[in-house]
Image (cartoon, rainbow, N blue to C red; front, side):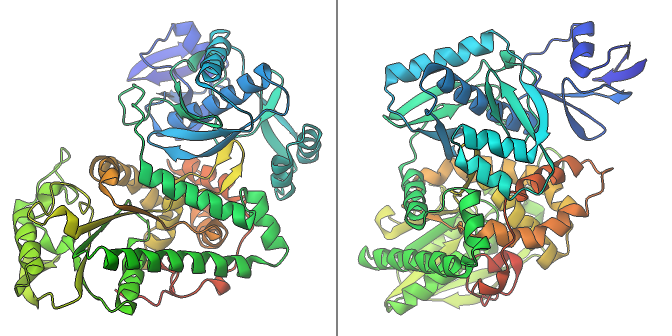
Length: 544
């Protein structure tokens, strides 16, 4: 007998598994139940049930969303395999506008894509079981070599586990780095958007979309940044984790690090040349947490100076309103991320007067006292360029008094193009989280548990104040480094291992550790002191 609590209601059951219990009580919900959680541990529905509170997870939760996305990828893969020749495959490239950008190794049309969607719905309607199996790593390697999937076989080569977990749907086997639903019947809410004859976008509800599938919007600047990164990876022959691991094991990682750093520095220099040629007066930089904005802005300033310009750096944080005027959120805490937390009239007026060539007394914000102190005088001389970093820098409600042709807006983000394999991408969000865990410990003495706890609030702020304005940018600067996960791994793994199994964040730590096992460690010795990665692991030549 088990005593179960759902939403405060008590149940007594003889059921052996979570799904049997839900069937027994006839549980229904607006959104499909994908997983469950007990005592902080995420479980698949066919796992044993035990005493305690049961939290049911749909795609409007973090864990449920990951499971839903991965199971849709699996469903798409299986549908393609059942419809076309065995060599047909999909390659999950990256996230894009609340969806996944996916390439195919065969030609598609809008009609073919509709057929694929209908096949996915057919399999979902059949409510097929998604079976979880444990096999020896060597047997899994043999299987993937037999079907010609060398990237998965190579990934498993670098995995030291004796056994690995695979999921089976129809006649296809695959692995994913999340828990999975037990049946396909829950996978009915999705859409496929045709891009060209070899690419599509898989769309689905997100945590922030209220259960609906967001509309697809083309973000040209971001697509260009991703394509540039993809072309660079192709030039170097590094697409998947196994490609990177081979470079590490061959002792050639130092050369790769130097090439990546040179490539980024060249991009920054070209960006500076464009700013000079277009005679811009104000450069505005914004991006989500742990994007490397600090190092990027300092590198840009160096390049601008090398071209004879005189960058003047300002931070929007110095224009915060006084503490007693700072808005508060629903939780009663100060909301420093909302636009109203910034003295926009003062900011707009100060920048306008600077651009006009006037001497302006600027504030320096005293964060201890919670007030602005007007101690800084600046004037833009010949060749001066304002470089401004801030969470709201791309918002079109900012700097309305300065003409648009005088402004140059840069969206900064580590857009990770490296994948684990064709079906498992490296999440840009996870990349940023790992960066932040390391930096929080290095610079603030905060634990990984602290950072993971704060991450959901960080993400909500980004969804509200940063991502909606990325299309306002004139340029998307990709700050990801092809080699970085191997370097970050060295620093972040010990921090994640410190999270005890009794912690509510243990599941998340375990997920990240399982992800990191796909990458060999990369020593930081060859990472230059002006690298973006130094902003997180320490040793940067750029001082605040």
